[in-house]
Length: 172
Image (cartoon, rainbow, N blue to C red; front, side, top):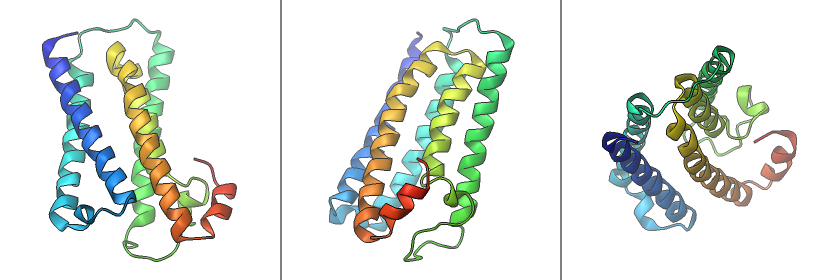
């Protein structure tokens, strides 16, 4: 593991931690999460998070030797994850303050396709690149994403009584 990999890992970890802290504060109804500047900062932090994560993957020197078919599965997972992320954004387009649960398109099958896309791509990409520590670090990132998902689902369950029925009909 190189020094530059560790630096990018630390940056990524700090960004994940800030985002998770923000989600916890938001769930607890902290007034700080309502400020436009704080929300804008979270978007910047998410951009830094993904940039640092990709940097980790590309610069890591400790590689695995995987058969081509496993690498191609990793590439497919990465592409599927990115597509889930994109299609989830398309499904949300124009519905910022909609006041109801979105159950159309990809949301008719998955409750959290964006988070699922993140998880799939952070597993698939390091497999494709054969990057050992980037793949192992996925455990940490998935843990954070699952916290985000859990908090969001708790909030939606309180806000929308029909959410519990929606949870029964959908996956993740």
